[in-house]
Length: 400
Image 1 (cartoon, rainbow, N blue to C red):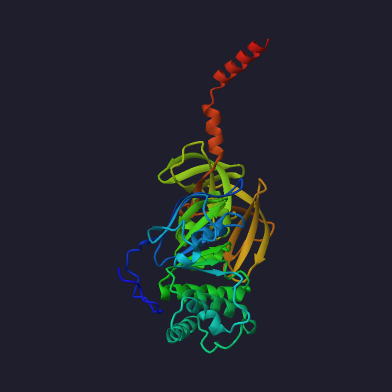
Image 2: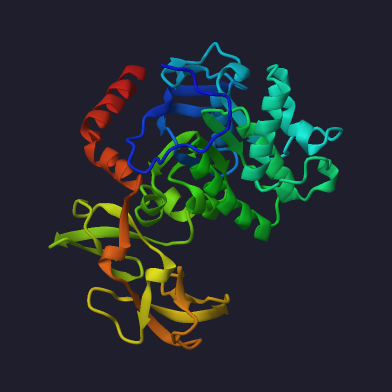
């Protein structure tokens, strides 16, 4: 296989290419003393994809990124890049570059010298350095800024310099650790679009760490949602949002209404359930009768009526109608004290404050989620209490 050229160039069309694995994480654990930060994690990341690692603070996402980069070493397991085990390779040997939230620009160097720094360390000829810096500046739309210093740039411009400095080395993988976290909301949204566009243009694999759900949904080809050191779900933004695998994901990604219910029966793809506040319907997901489940329904999918709808008897009082520009958020307090949120476009009518309303939804818009409560119930059901009682009596007799 011929070695790739050192110059930055736009890759050929990638639309129909079958993706190849570029980073594989196999059974990786990371301990800090007794703190188990990453737990037996397995993940495959493909060429030319934008993968976001999403999760709350302390879930292990930055630790995972640092292990891929080589700044941290896994306690056990294997990380391969392009099929090669990189456990004994230093960060600069991994053909990976990292963009940090802090930008990490040299304040005493102008923009040209900041971007060219890595190439100079590699002893690249001056004429090639200039050509590649010029192309990188065009890609990040900073041509004409070569002689400015970091102190003369806005936050968004500094971030683009950091990205230009990273991509100029033609890395196979670019790691980004919450790079937009220090930007204001408007600039952050603008940079999300620019980053995704740049990633498509370059054809480089981006692995992007964030705690911002909207950011991950906006930019990613796939999202790995981490929770307490585990990947709870790995899928496309549509799969993560519309079909969350766990209660944590349903609650963490966007906004949802969760109803803890008992499955009564299933007929024709419809699950008949009941909860403390009344009866409800859900999309059948293969749950057994009397099994406890969570039913997740997004606020934009819930409707309300002054009369109960067949299959639903969840009624309550309208407590709030909150104007949010493009939607009105209605809060209905059910009889069991649960607050249900409904999002309605501003051009549609909403129920009056203080009125009694019954909520319902199309069953295809619901997701039934397994609950750990079933494990406890099964353990109790399967417990051999007679044998346990006999063991206690034997011990008591021995103590007499």
